[in-house]
Length: 100
Image (cartoon, rainbow, N blue to C red; front, side, top):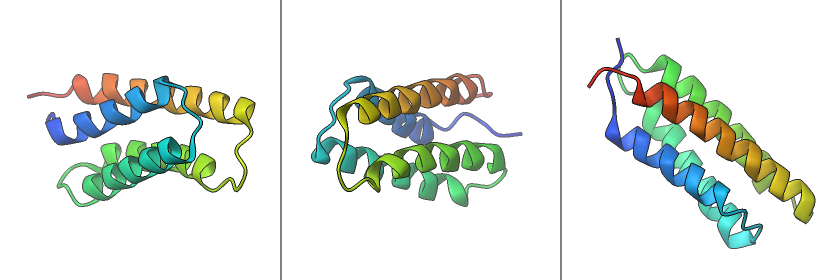
């Protein structure tokens, strides 16, 4: 059984907050990418953490899709950020419900 991990939860919270600000700047997208990569890497080798790693990897994929765009269309960016925010919120609910 996985237990609550405050580090994981904090990284997801940071991603959710940054995405909710709807800032479609190169700097913000880069910061989101770095935090999502950090979350994925952090989650990968924690014992009994397979589900969290899967969720972290899915969230990273969403962020990476935005990060890989050479030119960021504002409408696409805002829709992608909303998707990232919603995904991060679902992950927070899941992680927050784990035993402490």
